Image 1 (spheres, rainbow, N blue to C red):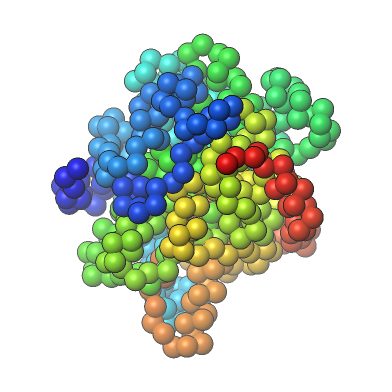
Image 2 (image 1 turned 30 degrees about the vertical axis):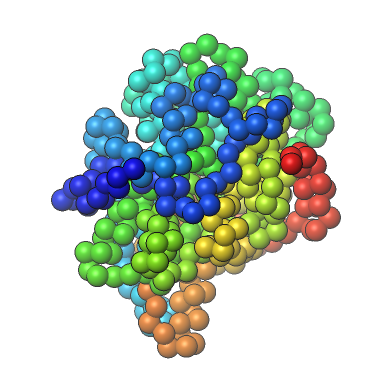
Length: 455
């Protein structure tokens, strides 16, 4: 296939007119989704009852380099894109580091995070298919907020299953979703058969993204005119989020800057995959010598302590099998974890890149994350989301290493959103009520041992 020059998709205001598919550059493609019954690769017609038709095409396409952004989605993006790439001069000064630190700020939209980039795209394709509405899950609430906004804009119904611990800890995110017209249910719930089963097996559970996914999929496939949409993990989501990395690279190129490291927080992989996409392409092609670092919570360490294997994408075991770094679909993170990043597995794309040695990963405890968040807020004037603060923590660590060595390295990290709806977590941190629960080897072995046998 003839490669299309990327420059034709870049407008004068540095906002891309196409999404970039990192799979097109990968030497080893991500393993395909498998039918849980037959263990054969999933076909488009098998995914049709769950996902929108156009999104299925994007999900399964390993070769197309660029996907043009539909005009209506592009016009919506204009409300808040291109998002700013900021030089953190004040943070550099406070740290006394020779490193140059840049952050791509995705919190300058009503949803407060990068999630809107994919939410509007998925809602658009649902609308074009003539659907009545969509179902989804949300962990910390950013994805549910973004999707409810997108659905409101396009006149679609939106049903959100919110992880119960977040539903209780983050009531303001819940209310923003309801303001946009979404129906929000704490998960697991008694409104679905899978929810009832999970509650029977785990009474009093605080939930997980895997639980919420199961419920959302059940409702989608059993309700005419609905489909399920997901805010992370899937190939299609990383595709939409590539607009983050494309804008970042365009801004850096304008000043002849090449990063020495690109850092992003990692839960399911949406923002990290989007941020690193063009940089990873250049690294694979030998055009860039750059460290790419995934930062995950020590309480849900998929990359650093998980197993690279096929696993169910959900706790109810109704979704396809994906090959990924996973802690097991039955893993439920400790309820005292204040951020999102609660998913038991990792994007198949990022898992393959990590397994190929093209990425690094580090797990960090949450009190250290909040210390970094507070340090950043005090000098840069933005209250960061707990998720974003994982990347801030490692960016600061790397900048301090530069201080020790005197190296003037260029650090780029993703600031995925704001933390103004996460003040309960900040309060617990300030009041000394937050701890650093880290699962034991025995905890992880139990859930990992239940991985499905796949040849």
